Length: 298
View (cartoon, rainbow, N blue to C red):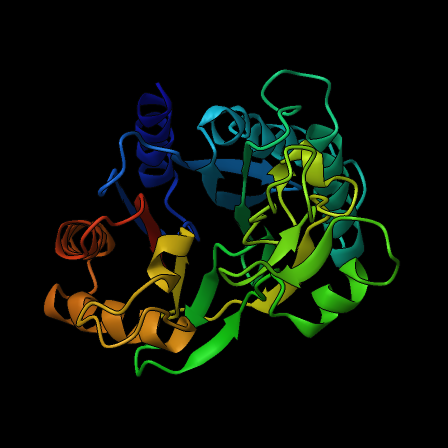
């Protein structure tokens, strides 16, 4: 169902023209039994200015939460389109923050499960600026055609010093701990007597067993938009492993180095490029996670 909705709005993006970027997206189930990633793109207009919302939600423990989050871009668009005062960065950021928080605390089955949740990265692309809201570890990266990173999101996990300080500021569980697997958000010893292996992330939609610390308060950044830049938004699977298996973890520059040659080979056509990138990663890496990416040529 969600792919039908994405295709509908992808066509709408093409029809609007103007400052709307060239957008391509792709998703692949990879080595998983079912697809937990969700991609949503849609357009809006406020005060005579067109904008685009590009979103990736990477579910875990099930697809219920990431599927339900299809409502979030639509809600943000509805509020933005009804603004009657001149838009300011503060107004836009406040709207995003409120809508993230509201949906995370809704009393619906999709949002109230203890160990089912989702990451989020949403980019609101206006004429001259991009508003980027993210929680957890699905990255957005803005880079130039020489491969230099201009801006990137921060990862919210137990390797981020600011998140460690926030989570471990008291003695209440969950805490950032070494679970024997990695540094994770953990509940410690469970009633079963087993040690909780925890969450890879310190912020998430859903995952109510880890609330209120694992909240969905977004980190919001405002990036300047310049024609010719490239915006990459993807699921956290792109941080998991290098294609040549030389390392089990990538960083954002590794992602750029993987994406840029494919774009160059395809004359910066975002749809052809993203199809090739996602297919290659999903089929080349054994037991790969669900793999999803949006590429926008600004």
